[in-house]
Length: 358
Length: 272
Image (tube, chains in turn orange, yellow):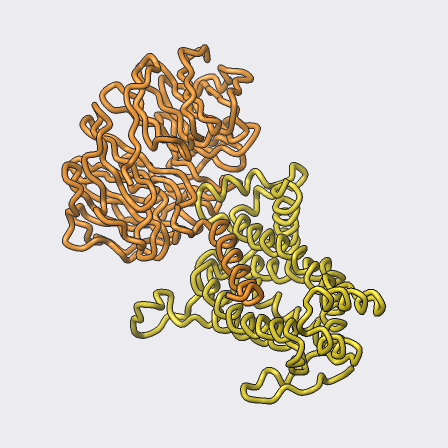
């Protein structure tokens, strides 16, 4: 081929590649994986597949779908129901919400739920036989455990990127529209809206005194079911992850990399200037008296309640996904690492890693 | 360096415009339009230099001295190259003047595209990267995430007007914006094509004409495909950028409007 004729084709090919690469639609999903686990398996939602790995050995048990489907992209945390379903939504073109059999990876429902118009970023809340599924189209969908709508969805506004929380009477749904929406479970209607002053990607956490939530306003707020709210503390940067509540202490972090422990009774910060090595996006995990934080720099940090370090490990990748607990092991899903999932024991010793076979 | 010099300033400019406009519905679309205009104005001298260089090269094709050396040294490429360089020097023409600005602009176009994608933050990682891009003096927490609704579109998603029936290859509906992108790209490319046919004895000129002709086909198809499959905010950028390019070229008086009609013979430009 004449070189001059080849120039436009080469330019266009380069342009296509450059634009595709920076748009995140070149076949690789440009965000971090979702993760959940039960006593037997870890479930990793990563790109084209949901993987089940044996919790003891890290061996792949199944993947869904068996063959790559370009319409399916997963990164929401899979939700596990009491009746043994694994429910997860796709970011792909058809915005499919599916129920999988955790043992086999086969679909449970006769038809997947496809009425949502946006991608599924958050895991649904499964409570008392109903699936409360927040979608980035701003709607909260109500389904039974067979995937059939039980009520009309309600438009809450913005994009819903976090799992709702419930106190048994109300649902608390944080939105990127800067609001926390309060929904009455019985009527399935919105009964209140609280302005958080910034987008909220984290789920609220329900405590005895109320509901606690962080947002991009950097504030941690306490909200009562009647909508009354007050700022409890202000971080130095956006709060991305869901706070963890343990023994009256609220543990949270910001994307500037600072870690906080707020005593709810006294309103005092128990830690000062605890800042490991990078942004913290994932929720903290509290297990066996330790508080686990993971950082963007790839560090897994186990702290005691006085902020002293029990152990610290480098994962070899960036960590944004919230770690989960399975039979006493800590499961961590690093982004852009040699492996997609790793298990650590309570002393920080790596037990296994899992990398999906091509 | 790419992040610091290109992406961050562009993202912050885009956010600033959006904030100044009032950050409500429709405003992100308007911000993209204003942003594109500002970037086009900044790169106006580069574009003007490109147009000027292309015109000089075009005029050279009709120069008698140029045509004579093409004929005389048709079989001696080395001598032909020497003579061509002599003519360039005598006439004060820089043969790279028309393509160098394009090369310089290419990173700007990619950066512009990346900035819009970054600002729209459609995935959690995009949102985190957006947080990192914001300058400390910008107090924009209250405007994030950007409201991406504009006219009938969600600028963060591919555009399409819903159809009463399903077409498998058009999952988003009728792709109006993609068609406008392809059309405006076609118009812009055609307008800038040489007004006169290439001298058949000048092989280089003929090859350049073939290359430009190829661009007139590939570019609309490629950009139309992008508009069909990617966030519609990018399609808005392409359309505004194309329209400004057409205006800029028309302002030089060299736009060859006859080129737009298929089957029309190439004629002289509207003004020389």
